[in-house]
Length: 77
Image 1 (cartoon, rainbow, N blue to C red):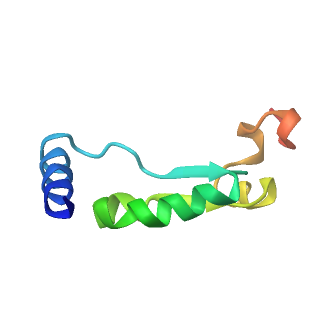
Image 2: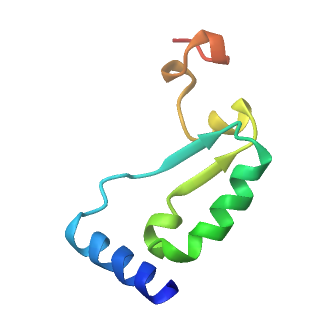
């Protein structure tokens, strides 16, 4: 099954170009990180490196300007 999953992932990556620059994941339940670590080996390493897990809004400000974040989340938009 693992070989089949890797083959499908490889074909999808070759035929559907990656258009995401970075995926910021904020305030997820703890199990999400665990599940992502299980799935990560099946994802192309370049794509997996684009996923950034953030624990707080303050960490979000390191990646996104405060002016682009709604006031409800601590930004100034």
